[in-house]
Image (cartoon, rainbow, N blue to C red):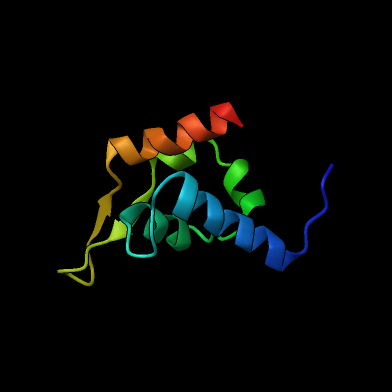
Length: 84
């Protein structure tokens, strides 16, 4: 088993989201993961289908409203995790 520092785990998470899945810092998927407290690769690879299906992000037009993440983005995460 590979041992990563906390910093390396965050870097790996950002690499996967930014370069592998094509989600930058302004994406709703990345925002929803941050809202759930998922900010490193270990948290990411242990996501369950239930957590993925319940991902929401804060609406940029209305500060109190949360919207569900698009189904395509959820499936992107599920496909990556299945491949991993």
